[in-house]
Length: 318
Image (tube, rainbow, N blue to C red; front, side):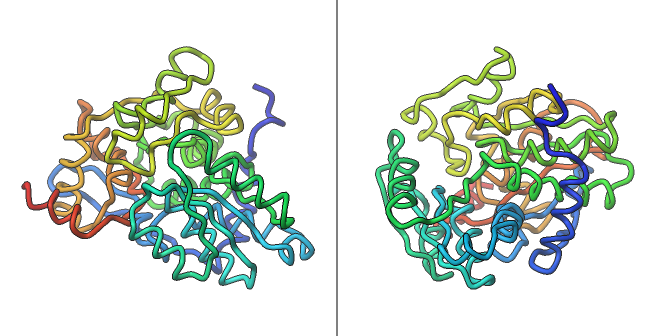
C-alpha cells in the first residue's frame, strides 16, 4: 500500500490541534477486576467518538463551503456529532437517518438544530436521499467514514491512548464503516508498530472480518446486519478509504455474539461505572472473550447513547 494513499501521522497530529478546543480528552478507566482498560469516548459531549471526525471535517471546509451548509447520513451517532459540530460552528446541518435508528439518537440530532429526514433503513435509501439533497441544495457532504478528514479525526483517539497507557500492547476497536479503526490503527502503527490493533464486529454483521480474510471488500446484506442489537455496527461493508488502512495496519478482526455484547454492557456498568450502548460495548466484549493478560489491553467504548428502557432491561439481566 503506497503511503500517499494513507492518512499520515502528521495529518492526525494536525487534526488533534484543530479539534482540541471542541472535544474532550477522554479518560481511560480500568475495569476491575479484569484489568482491561476502557477508553471512554462515551463521555464526549454527544456521547460518542464521532464528534472528533465531524469537527475535523467541518473545520477543514472553506468559508464558502460552510456557508452552503453540510449534510450527512447516519444511524445516529454521526448524525448527532455533525449536528452538534455544525451548531457550534454556525453551520446549517441536514441529516438523513434510517427510520429504525434509536429514538434517543434521532431526538438528540434534532436537539442540536439539524434538519432531519427519516428514510427506509433497507437498501441504499440513506445515501441516495443524502446525495439528492446535496445536489439540489448545494450542501457539502460530511460522510460517516469514507473520508481522510474523518479518519484523521478518529486517529486522535489512538494518540491519546498512547499518551495515557504507556504499557498498552493491544487495542480493541469496534468496526462499522471502518473510519474509527482506520484512524486509530494509523495513529498507533505509525507510532509503535509493535502494538496490536484488533477490530471487533457482531457475528451478525461481520463484513469487515470476511473482507480481511478474503483480501477484498465483502458485502453483508442489510437484511442480515439489521438483526444485531448493535445499531451503530449495521453497515453492510467497510468504505474504500478505511479499507486501505485496515489492510495496512489492522492485525485481526474478531466477532462477538449478541449475548457477549449484552454481557459486556453489564460488565462495563458494574466494573467501570460507565454506560455503553451495544455498539459501544462490542470492543470490550471482544477483549473479554480473548485469552491472555488484559492488563495490557485497552478497549474502546465508542458510544453511550442507548434507549433507557432497553438498557435497563439488559442491565437487569445481571
